[in-house]
Length: 406
Ligand code: NAD
Ligand code: USQ
Image (tube, rainbow, N blue to C red; front, top):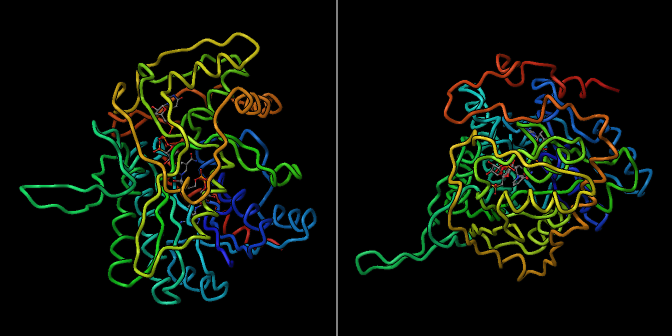
C-alpha cells in the first residue's frame, strides 16, 4: 500500500514508518519538527541520541535499499496538507502528528491553546484535504485510551448500547478525559466521526494506551535509525521513566497511591496494530474505534516490576499527585478488535523490562537528574517552569531550517 505517516519523525511515527517500509509498503513521512522544538523549549533531550530526519532517511536507504519520502511541513497549514496528498497519493494515512503530552498541555493557558489548536486544526485540515483530494483514503488516527477516563463501568471499544426510557441505541462511549491534551483527542474523534458521516470518509480511531520500549527490529539495524526516548517529567511516560530512574538511582516517582490503572502496550505492538488497521480498511463512510492496548497495570504494579527486574537497589517515592485523577478506581476495558485481526501481543515481563533497563543503562551519562521530577500541576493555571514563558514554536524554527538545508 501507499501509506503516509504523519508525525513520522516522532517516537512512534519513525519506527512505524520503517516497519511499514520493510513490510513492502511505499511510505512517506510528514513532520514539522515540533517535537524537537519542545526539547529546546523545555531544555531536555531524548535519552537516546536521534539523528536528523534527513540523515535517518539516508541511512535507512543504505541499510535496507528502501526509500522513505520525507515531507517537511505543518498540518495546521491547509495548503501544505493538500499538496502532500496530491503529490504522494496515499491509500492510507497514519496520523501521529499531534502534541501528545498531557503535562505539556497543562503548563498554562498558552500551552493548552497551542495543544488544542495544533491537534484539532491539524486533523480538521486533514479531513478536508482527504475529502477534496481522495475520499477513499483510509485515515488511521491515533487517539488515546485516556479519552474514556476511568468510569465505574466497563469501557467498550468506542461505542456502547444504551437503553433509556424503553428505547435503545448504540452511542459513542461517554468521554471523561483527564487533560487538555486528552480532550483534544476527544474533539478529534467527534470531528472524524462527523466527517465520515457527511462525506463518506473511512477512518479507524486507534484509542491507544501508554506505550513502552524503545527498540524495534528496524531501529536496531543502525544507531542513526534509533527512535527517541523521553524520561523527563513532561514528556516521559510512566514505565519508560521508571526504567531510567532505576538506573540512575532516583527513587521511582509514583504519583499518589499508584492505584491509577492504565492500558499499556509494547512499542512493537504499536507498529503491528497500525499495519493491521491499514490492511483491513473500514467501509466507505465507516468510523470505527479500536482500543489499542494489550494489558493493564496499576502504576504501583509497574513500579514493583521495575524494582524486581533491576539487579541493584531501587526505592519508591510516593509523591503528592500533581494531576487531578482517581488514584483508586475500577478499570476494565475491552480490547478484542485488534486481536481478532491477528495481533499477537508482546506482553510485559522481566525480559522486556530488562531490555528497557539496558537502553537506559547504555545512555545513563545523558540523563539530566533535574529533568526527572514532575513540574506541572493540574490545579495550577500557570506552572512555573524555567522556560514556560516562551510560547511553543517561537524558538528555533526547525522546519524552515530543514527546508533550506541542502
Ligand atoms: P511524538 O511527539 O514523539 O511524535 C509526534 C510527531 O508529530 C512529532 O515528531 C512532532 O514533531 C509531529 N507533529 C506534531 N504536530 C505537528 C504538526 N502540526 N504538523 C506536523 N507534524 C507535527 O509523539 P508519540 O509518542 O510518537 O505519539 C504519536 C501519537 O500517538 C500522538 O498522536 C499521541 O497522542 C499518540 N499516543 C502516544 C502514546 C505514547 O505512549 N507515546 C500513547 C497513546 C497515544
Ligand atoms: N505517573 C506516575 N509517575 C510518573 C509518571 C506518571 O505515577 O512519573 C502516572 C500518572 O499520574 C498517570 C499514569 O502514570 O496516572 C500515566 O501517566 P503517563 O505520563 O505515562 O501517561 P499519560 O499522561 O496518560 O499520557 C501518555 C502519552 C499520551 C497517551 C496516553 C495514553 O503521553 O500521548 O495518549 O499515555 S492513555 O494513558 O491511555 O491515555
